Amino acid sequence: MCGCHEVGFNSVKNLLENGFSLNYIVTITKEKAEQQNVSGYASFDLLALEYGIPIYYVEKYSMKSEADLAFFKRNNFDLLIQGGWQRLFPGEILKTLSVGAIGVHGSAEFLPKGRGRSPINWSLIEGKRRFILHFFLMKSGVDDGDVFHYETFDINDWDTCKTLYYKNSILTKNILLSFIPKLLDNDYTIIPQVGVPTYYKKRTPEDGIIDWTNTVFVIHNFVRALTKPYPGAFSFVNNEKILFWKVQPFDTRITYPNALEGEIVEIFDSTDFIVQCNSGLLLVTEYSCKISIQVGQIFTNKNE
Image 1 (tube, rainbow, N blue to C red):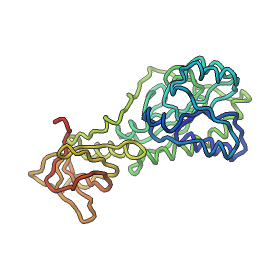
Image 2: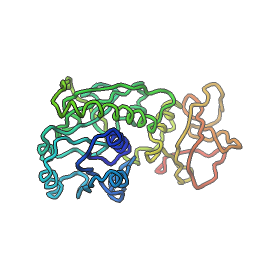
Image 3: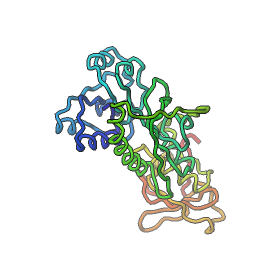
Image 4: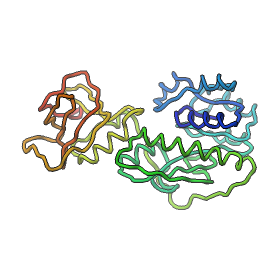
């Protein structure tokens, strides 16, 4: 198992609880995860200790080091399960595996559409209504391996990036239980990727700035795509950063004729507040800030 994400943790825990055994867990330290801005990091330390599985901490997250390659060559593994590794696997390491490496990638469209980074976040931002989880045998390119199975789940109005990870975890656990024996017995059918690939761009914490000229529905999708465990959508009041964790479209008929886009127009006793957006009002119910929120304040980009 090669992973450092909560989805991978849940998958390997489920495998172990169902009688599967692992030769090694390959992961990174918490410190390296922080250095590499890994969102949704999960430590495998206690799980490995409970089941007596040795851990190898890679020298480089990219695994492009002589020590990391030597580790894989020395162990001659049959099958590798990728559990949330936000870097490409070097071809030299993949060649050491007799069966291959199980990759998992989701997209709102069938691969090769939607390869690349942060597909759950992008699917929410784009207002998609479904998510297709692909299981494939990894190659050294970006999500370009041959698919051996896929499953689809809903993206509904109440979902956030966190709940989509729950759905991802459920399906991944079940599919690995079913397909690991088939892969080891060479009892599976390949579904080639057909068509012209498209790629989601890499996202960074700085990409979370809110554009208040967007519609209330676009901003709602943006916030729920970047909420915990991600760094969060944000804006500024008087150069102070405000993080938005939970919002919802409030109303499109109630109006504040003189309000500007991004302006706070109401504050309630619960500390919830309403912001004027393009085509409607946004209710903010969970947020983090170091200042007092007041009616009339206007959210802006700090550089403006």
